[in-house]
Image 1 (cartoon, one colour):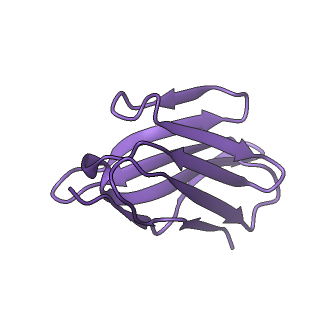
Image 2 (cartoon, rainbow, N blue to C red):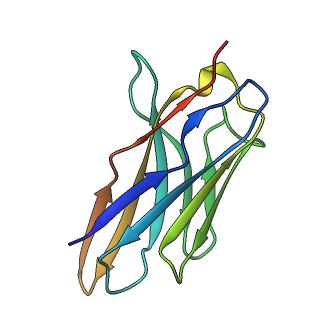
Length: 119
């Protein structure tokens, strides 16, 4: 059974840092890509950061230069380093992974981890 587990969220002061982790278990092969989304209070879920195993990365304009996503292919684990956090970064952060086995591809979601940056 595939499981996606986020961790590392919490309460942090403005300007502080957090590192979120996304651990994926139950897969035979490595994931193809990982995307972090977030959903703030009263807001729609938005894409924050993306990484592909070939190295391609994309970031939302709101986090460019502050967030960095890395991927440990061997462990099927990703890390979202968040620096210079702002109150507007407050949200539940979700990890989504894309995985292909032969011709079939799937995506899996974690349950989310809360990040709170008080104003």
